[in-house]
Length: 330
Image (cartoon, rainbow, N blue to C red; front, side):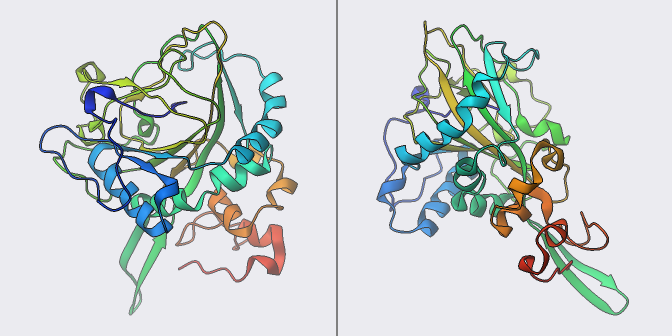
């Protein structure tokens, strides 16, 4: 999991991409598009541009995606948990980092605006939907779609003195073994990440390093070959989406007193195990207060066909009664 966004100077990313042209595929060097949320007239065009950027380079920045009022509300709700959290003691997470998880029930603003972000959901559906075709039951041929689900919720508070994180792929937790490929094809991915900047991220305070195009490498290729990367830099309210197969890692926070604050959510395929156990990580009474669609996305719905039921029904139906509607397992 990476607590920052991307801006790679060595890959000529200072030229913004307008809302009209689609990201063009470079012959040698992949580009990570920087799209401005405020210039789009509809979500459909933005979603298409994000998808094209992710296919080409593994990541996409969306400028100005979140308003200050949303960021302020999220921080008010999550800051007490940050203050009550000890610094990380795990080798994988640098020791000056504080992580707050179980955010669906700790911050309603986070749940609705980050985990429930409709643009991220549509992009996740493109990359992470699984279709089962021609499944024969007797004389009947059935087709079933398993939609993506939420895997992890986390807020990163990265303090001064934090050392750099090793480059890694987030999708290795799913034993994802993708071969090298000159272009992206559907079925390759098991994770899509969303990062939202709560505060400014700079090279000095440890914005993430990422290698564009590394999502197309063979999974066995060492990150030692990742020679070209730069630090991710962003303004508050920017968002970044990244495929889980891209090599990345948090940078070092060398400032005297700057906090890097990032809110993140991770999605995976509906039939895979969630990285964060959403059923025990959250207050179920708070989960019941969320929209039914978000409850389903959080893992309280069924992955078709027939995955995740309780007493042969969806958990969301048991939690919400008739308000959840009828359950269809195909």
